Length: 181
Image (cartoon, rainbow, N blue to C red):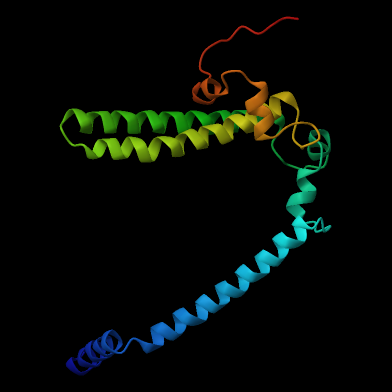
């Protein structure tokens, strides 16, 4: 790169720092696009509130029963047992990572660094939510419930399971005796 090219590059950079109008125009255009998208979303929400029959693929898929979803899976899709192993692994990973952050935060607090408290307060809810997501999917697989009609949502999980928060943080390691009835 020659001295002339370096000079031009520095000159352009300096010009853009001093004269920011192109960047401002681009930001205004993006803001206008976001405003238009927001207005479309508001119209959609108002239509839903009025009881309009707007259906999306997400809505129609959530109305399917567990049996329908399992029957209509594509070829090569994982089995129920494989899905259960996957979600259990995901739950254990979230719990293990959360425990690692507890150890790191605790060590930082012991050493006198009070930012360890920030680590605990910011990270633990994230790992709890990841574990909750995996536990909900495990519960849905085990109970063979998925849709709102089958009572397979998060509210149903919380209402039906006493001590649901303990199930969320239980890594399910070891042997558990199952009822034989």
